[in-house]
Image 1: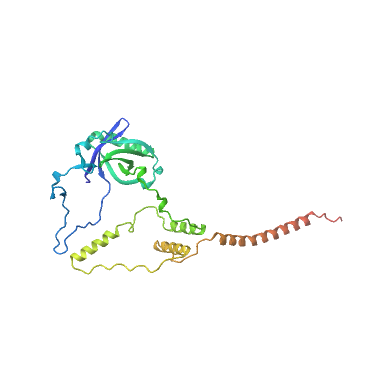
Image 2: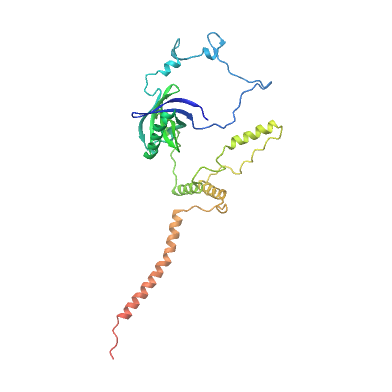
Length: 312
C-alpha cells in the first residue's frame, strides 16, 4: 500500500473532506549506486559545515534563506506549518473547467486522494460522484514542498486524483525553438494522415507498451551475476538518411500495415489529387458519349411518332 505523503482536507464551498495524499504511480526502473572501482566500496556523500570544516549530523541541519551574503534567516518546520495561507493544510477548490480547456503540457504527476477516516467517506463520495456527473475537473490550490501549488482534481474510477499543474509563467514559449518557415504540400499532408491512420489504435494495451530498456538491463545484470556471455544487441535496421519525404511516408505506411498483419508490405503510391482528377475525368467521358447516343435515339423516336398516318 502506498504511503501517505501529505494530509489535509479538500475545501468544497462549506463542505470539508479530510484526505490523505498518496502517489498514484510506481517507478520500476533499475537504479545504481556509485562504487569505488578498486575495492567495490560504496561511495557516499557526506554533509560538511563550511565554517567548522567538519561533518554534521542530520539533527544539526536546518533550513534557511540567504537574505544577504552574511545574513541567513532561519526557517523552521513549525514556521512552514503555520504559514498565513488558507491553503497551508487544505486543498482549496477554486473553479471547475472542461478538461479539454487545459493544455496537457501544464499537467504533471498524479496522486490518489483517500478519505481520512469514516467521517470523510460520505463527503468524499459526494464530491466524486458530483464531479463525475459534471464532466468537468476542479482547479485547486494547496501548499506543498515549500510553495503554493496549482492542481487539477479529477475522477478515476472510484477514486479522486490530484494532478500537479504548472503555473502559466512556468511554461516556456516555444517560439524560439520552432524551425524556419517551410512549405508542406497537400500530398505530403495526405501521406502523413495515411501513416497516422495505419498506426492508430483504440487503447494502449499490448506487448509494445512495456519497458524494454529495463528488461534488457535486467538481462545484463543476470548474465554478469551468473558469469554468462552478455546478450547481443539487435542489429540496427538497414537504411540511411531518406531525402524523399513522400517515399519515406509510403514506406512507413507499408511497414506499419505489415506489422499489423494488414496484407503484404507493398509500397503503393499515395493518392495524388491531380492524377485522381484526371482519372475521374477520363472515366466520365465515355459516359457522356453514351448519353449523347441515347439522346439522339430518343429524338429520332419522337420525330417518328410525331408523323401523321397516311390517309387511306
